[in-house]
Amino acid sequence: MKVKSDPQQLFKEIMGSYPTGVTVITTLDENNKPVGLTVNSFASVSIDPLMVLWCIDKNAGSCGVFKKADNFAVNILAGNQQEVCWTFASKSEPDRFAKHPWVLSENNLPVINNVFASFECKKVQMVDAGDHYILIGEVIDLNKNEQEPMLYFRRKVGNVPENWA
Image (cartoon, rainbow, N blue to C red; front, side, top):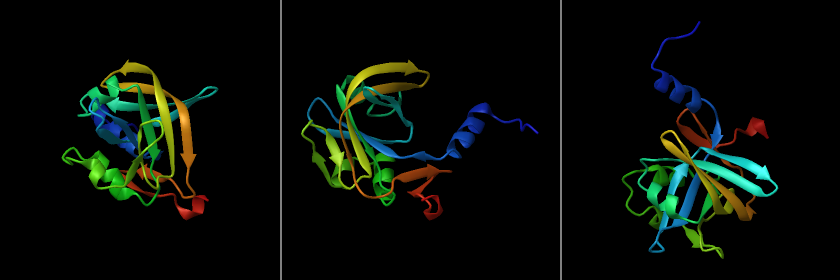
């Protein structure tokens, strides 16, 4: 039986019940200050060439920085990095990078320490899509650490369940 509801609220409920990975997307602003935000709308696009995509809300405080940036890093969080997830998701955190160790990569991108994996990307396209932009990047460098990725499910984040291994 179909339940009548506000379509946007029902959409959020459905999508929140669809497990996804959790990433923090990072770049440098025009003053070489690191900028980043938590994102779960991330996907692979192509193997040849290596390409990924992610989406940013047009109302996000850092949207303008990412629109102007030529490159970005996708930090796929490890299952034990819940604090990193919530720090970079917070709209009130003034200096997100002061709370968590990170390095500036050889490609001049901020990469968070101890993530499951990272992709450093050259932005190749930005698509206007409703209340978001889709940013597509070609992977120019990638790294994977020996740990499990973080999952987002029903507004909770954490490790991959052991019985999934």
